[in-house]
Length: 508
Image 1 (cartoon, helix red, strand yellow):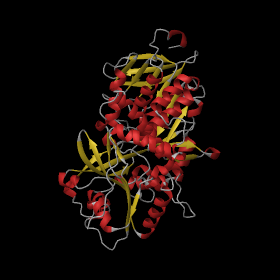
Image 2: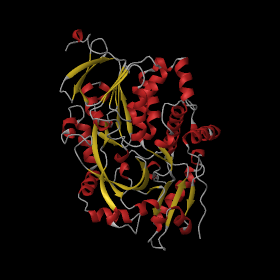
Image 3: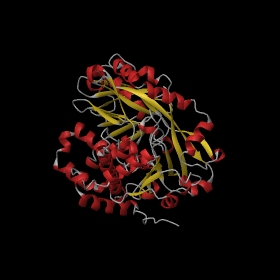
Image 4: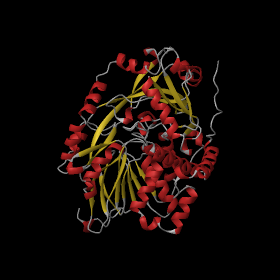
């Protein structure tokens, strides 16, 4: 189809590709900022949030940097770097403000359907790790965002906080933990589906399941021509739009490559699969009430930091351990084994080869993880639960993540462990690549996208006022204003039902 014969094609103001948390967040933001916008959403599966945003696919922790040790690396001089942790903590507070606004306006169901209070804890053993955690606690609590974080090396206190973790452990072993009662568990699957239910009730919004975007091309008039394949009928049609957002999780990279914008050249992807051990014994589940994160194994990707994770999924309390990482050439859980080879192009082959050569230890680690036996997985679990029994745990397949490979100096490749927004210079298209802490920081990421792709509208008094209504701290640095943090946390905790639990005391 040439630019001249696309006039009859549907022409929404916005096309969102992928029905996950990112598209849901951007769609709701845009309709709040400009209710007249028309939006078409295309999802290849039969439901929203079925890939990375699903609660079983490792998108269940409200990442706020309270317990994730990979966000606070120890530097060569022995000090603890807290910059990334502070940024993530700020971003999660932004998410909570936006969700609170939606709940207050009646646009989301009761907050308990998607967010719960749950302590966030870090747990380590061994003298060196205990010293690291002690220094991490001291460094983080210098910032008011981490006020209230408790630290203990006392076995009696730890037995009260995490009885299963301490049960059967050598009493002479040196251990330590931090605890933040302000932590949360977020079911991003439930939240995403609720946001799309709201969007579908609005005029000018259409959500299409079983629809796969197969091509993207920019026409001479500056609009994007999006070719869509209806998987139910095998029919295809084309949509014209001035703006496209690619929020397709692991499927974003292939679509960005099809768009062929200069800003997307040189990007590649490294897929990482995952599995959980899911507890099936209600008595065990009942005795653990926390998200407990440890230190990753040497060579492990950050998304594979082991944790013993209490979650609420479909109204039931669940207990998961993992994730166990693995290697697959799929970019999506429901993807193709040809995803990785098909993503290799002339403009990214050098960065991808370079990144591969510089990360051979990661590749070996992932292959070793794939080859693990049930006994190997149980041994890893028993580092956290010494008394664990194999009959109490089943293996559950988690989601796929695609780590970003971007062009570095001299054309080499750098493997990035985070999220990356790639947008065209004219703001007509943007894609979100990468993984953790993704979902938890979706609102901050989409605010950044608005600045890139809707700069004129964002500069208007109307959009600025609306953003401050939805996110009272908008435009202010929470990491630099203790009074503002106290104010927004008091409000969001009340609206979302997240009043911190009473401070625990040591038990005899």
